[in-house]
Length: 277
Image (cartoon, rainbow, N blue to C red; front, side):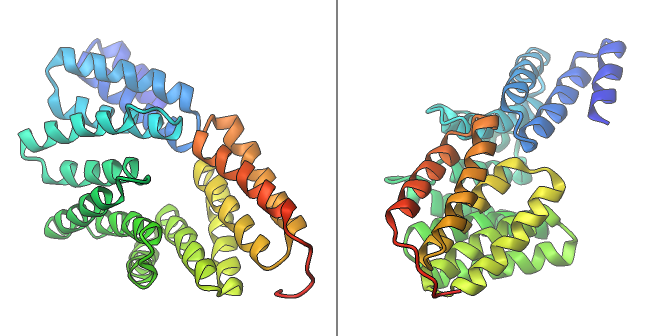
C-alpha cells in the first residue's frame, strides 16, 4: 500500500507528499528488517522534507533512521534521535516528543547510559499518559521494563511489562504484546522461573514470525536460547541461537548477531543435563 502511495506522490510532483511516502515505506522496510532499503528511503525523505521546510515530517524520518542505525550498530543512532527530539519540542508536538524519547531511550540502553535511558522512558510514559495514548504508554513501559532488567530492578521490570502486555492485548496490538512477552520471558528466566519464561517466549516468537517482524523474532530466539541453556537443554539452545543468527545476519543486525554468537558459545560450554524440563 505504501508503495502505491509512493508512486502516486511521485506522480503528483508534490515534494512534501513524496517525502512522507518515502518515510512510510522506509518505516515498513525497517520493521521487516530490510535495513539497507530502509536507510535509502529514510535518508532521501530527510533530505526532501528538510528542503520543503517540513520540520515535523523530517523529524519523523530522522527518528526512524535513528532506529535503523541503532540496529546496524552505528554510533550516530542517538544523535539522530536527539535531532528529532529537538524538532518535536520546538514545534510543541508532545506525542512526537514521547515517541522519540522511547527511541532515544532504546538507543541509550547500553552500559554507562542506563540511568539516562530510564529517565527518558519514564518521561515518555508520562507524556503518552497525558495525551491519553494507552498504546504509546505501553510501548514506553515495555522498553522501560527492559532497562529495569539491565539495572537489576527485576520486580519493577515485571510490573511495567505485565501492565504493558495487558494494554497491548486489550488493544489487539500483536507486535506490542509479543515484545512485552519477550521481555517478561527474560525476567522470568533471570528469576529462575524457566517454564514460564519458555512459555512467554514461545508465544512471542509465534506472534513475531506471523507478522514478519524479523528483529523481534531474532531477539526472542536469543533470549529463549539463554533460558534453555540455563536448564541444560543445550542442543535446543544452540538451535535457537543459530536461527537468531541466521535472521540477524540476513538483516545486518549487529547486536543480535553478537548476542547469538555469545549464546552459542555459552551453550556449547555447558554440560548437557536431562533435568529442568
